[in-house]
Amino acid sequence: MHLYVDTADLDLIETYARSGVIDGVTTNPSIVAETEYTYHEVVASIAERIDGPVFAQVIADDVSGMVEQGRAYDAWAPDVIVKIPATTAGYEALDRLRGEGIRAGVTVLFSVSQAVLAAKNDATFVAPYVGRLTDAGEDGLQVTRDIQAAFDAYGFDTEVLAASVRNTQQARELYRAGVDALTLPPSVFEASFDHHKTDEGLAGFRDDWGDRGDPLRADASEDQR
Ligand code: E4P
Image (cartoon, rainbow, N blue to C red; front, side, top):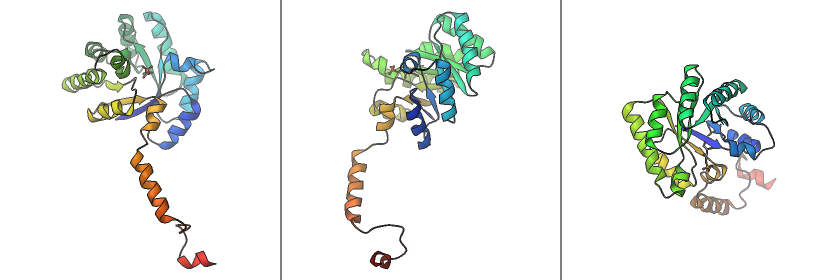
């Protein structure tokens, strides 16, 4: 499976990359607009900091604009995946970009039907928005499970990339479902390392170790010197 982080914060990305557990970075226009940089600068800077793809979303809403932006994004760094919205024009742009061998997939996606159409166009990924569906009173987790089940049944290569994940409980359910990939916002990614019993267990080990000193010392007599 692939685990991505959904951010354009370069300091966080550097830290997360050092953890060794992330496979790439996803961005969208809102995330990039929070920075002081151009989309090109953001993608190039992220690409320098990670070993894996940077996902960049087209801004245009017409076919030729999306294709033009997709081609440009693809040339910004060696490992860019273009994000295209799930609109009628988006599917046409996707077909053209995939025909040129450019990696591209469908985002802002909310249904199994949208996902299957994307896979028919050989999308590199589909990104169902789990949190936004759930916020709207729908079952975002189930929609994502259904997409994964349909893709597995048909043998599609398109990666199911669960997006808009709001908390670690949603992430856990997506892991349980064996979803191909998740992108997590910084808050959920960081919370994924934590468990209160880990903190409690470590406090106990520290207390028990007390003043026993350096665990690397050769023998207890070194403490007396
Ligand atoms: C996906 O790649 C999107 O960038 C993102 O997950 C959207 O999440 P949001 O609903 O928190 O904006």
